[in-house]
Image (tube, rainbow, N blue to C red):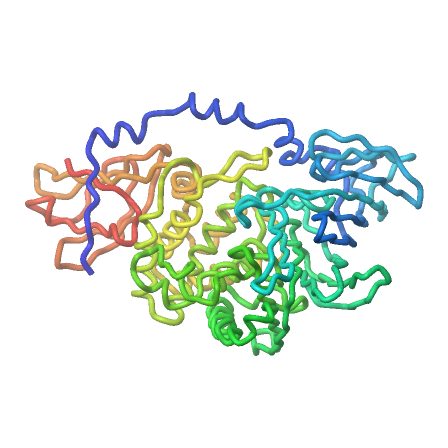
Amino acid sequence: MKHIIQTLTVIALTALYTPSHGQLMKAKELFSKADSLRGTLTPLRTCYDIKYYHLDVKVDIDKRFISGSNLFRFQATADFNKLQFDLFENLSVDKVLYKGKSVPFERSYNAVFVSFPQTIEKGKIDSFVVHYSGTPVAATRAPWDGGFDWKTDSNGKPWVATACQGLGASVWWPNKDHQSDEVDSMLVSVSVPNGLMNVSNGRLQKVEKLKNGYTRYDWKVTNPINNYNIALNIGDYVHVKELYQGEKGPLTVDYYVLEENKAKIPHLQKNAKQTLDAFEHWFGPYPFYEDGYKLVETAHLGMEHQSAVAYGNKYQNGYLGRDASGTGWGLKWDFIVVHESGHEWFGNNITSNDLADMWIHESFTNYSEALFIDYHFGKKASLAYVHGNRQGILNDKPMQGPYGVNKEGSGDMYPKGGVLLNMIRTIIDDDDKWRSILRGLNATFYHKTVDYVDVLQYLNKESGMDFTTVFEQYIQRKSIPVLELRKTPDGKLACRWITETAQFKMPVHIGLKGGEQKRYMISDKLTILPLQIDDLNKIDVDTFNYYIGTLMQ
């Protein structure tokens, strides 16, 4: 395989490492009180641990209006008489009931503060019910801007969905809207006009015709779930069900597609089976056997709604028929089925505590696309796909966002994150161990929330290597490491890393052109390698699998 040396000029390096403290300060000033109320875990939020929700909502499609209630069942983690839950300020909190009686509440931006008549003691299991109503935010470009996606199908029938990642689940239902506290289980009851169906997360428990021209669909989620994954999907759906023989036994697989597209279900069936085959191999058993796996057709492109994956890729391979890698490998499978299903392992099974660490969701899931290719088409194809995705990297800001203000990092968390993980695989240089690490991540953090340190410490422990400065440079900084290459007076090769991260160290594969590459540990101090050279241009650095720059001195 031919490797291309990426040479950076001194001018480019100077620009790359010039501090931008003024820009950082300006960014910090943009965080509002609403951001802090949503993103910060104050005592008014940590004082209770959510155990169960019952969301019961009626959707008036003609008026684009919703009304209903949500039961909060929680365990007190401290003594308290006041707590915070979240609901966007454009929606009305009609009343809050505690033990059947209204209790006072105050609102500040999208936060609601409830006062209780007496202290709720630590350890107690208790509950309250929020009744609410209003016109929810309408998404103009779902799923990127979030809210309700009000559409009609080609037959003019209503076709409605929710998507609210980033914006927050409190855009349409009251909850403790922070990723660190996943509800243990949930009942989702959605009432829709007769003749339509609602599909939500988990398993359908009951369908009941109401007296007001509506039908209520009750869906039960038995596994922990993060708030933004809760979804409703309303439409003229047909349903096809099958069983997948997975690692934990039979897994129910359901397809809900528009009546007009029922003949296209085989496309989904093929891609779903290939996806489950690949990901159970690499990541371990599908994490939600109890709740099943569903693909639900939506007017928007797609979202990783746990056990009810939203699908809107129009029954074609690629990403709306395109391959961002430019290699052609991305056109051999349906991007939305693969990517959004990958989130069942990374994002839904393993969830970041804070939106700042959304890179955990997106980096691993971007990389899952390459592992899908690896499983079905081979490692060479997988590596080519990862390398091709580099063209989408901006290096505009760190992949990790600031903590406590409900902000994620750079969109580089997708392609750069996938490139980073492929590079770590290359460094470890043992694919059996790498697969064991990925499966172990999903077993160790099964149905848990994690942060940057959790993932790093696990990787260091299981690999037997120290990736601390590698993580810092690629995730918490925006630039990439530059490998400086020098020829010593006695004809040896000397190398060092130039980075923003102090005491940076990372192995890299280096050799002579036409010869074998070997892995050498390089630090920010000049290291003499056992390679005799007469010309730096004869050095072959693996810049195909290592996302680095090079500088020949």
